[in-house]
Image (cartoon, rainbow, N blue to C red; front, side):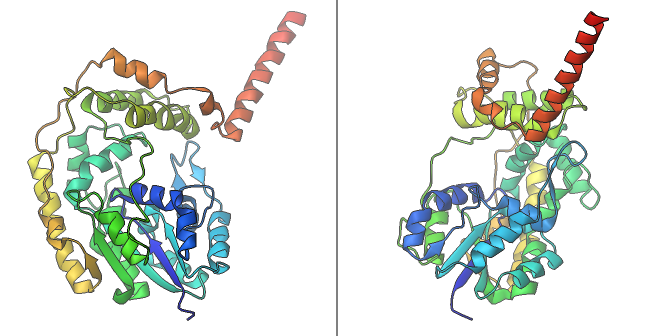
Length: 370
């Protein structure tokens, strides 16, 4: 080996990955000055490369979901294999969903570097409300409590969010990476919400960067939804016409109304929040304690409070879903649509719409002439 490093950051989901990717992207020049490459492949993360190698569809598979070309992975491999920097880091939480065969392909494709795996994690109990809201943004149509019962009580066969346990059986996921790269090459960083800078400080140390190189980046609040907004999105998902595509949902709902609310609208203090039933927190912490035992047996390097995985707390209670919503909230969401949305229409969608309009005009003109 050349002594050069490749650090793969495969998540986990909802563990501060977006914040870390934002910082890595923003500080690319500063990283490069310190001998670290964060490859710019058109996005702030490397999700498309992860989707390409996993052959995963992003979105609704039967309604226009994105089939990611293998070129995204191949281009990233080429960039890494020709890099001159002493260290390279790539990041996507979707790498955590890879099976053993795909992880072996990563090892085979990436040449000439010592590969290290850096995973970030929060306790499962703390992931439940944020994961539910993330699935809502994919079109989920069930309430939180129903979703919780489904994922815990129908764990092996659930169709509501089938990717949840593929992502969040944390011990099994880490074991797959250990199986390919060995425990000495796998590090787990357990995030600490009480110390906002903890994640960035530890990653700086891991990458051998000067203190303060990576820091939190403010790019919109990306806050949690309150219960009014959750109820609104649930109703939108239930009523969203089946004949409309994933592209339309992304442009108008996911990246339109919802992003406008979470990034730019500050809710009133009296708005209720999503609450987690105590039984679900207990189930999650029990699984967390099982994960602790699995991790100890795997022998990976652990940074942070391992015991927190089995003793987490979140706001407990029964969520109340309002049937009305503040008119100001609705107005703020509707104003999310602006001219920038037009630039995000997929070409296939625009061409299909144009084709329908042309056919309609031809028929109308034929009737007039007839």
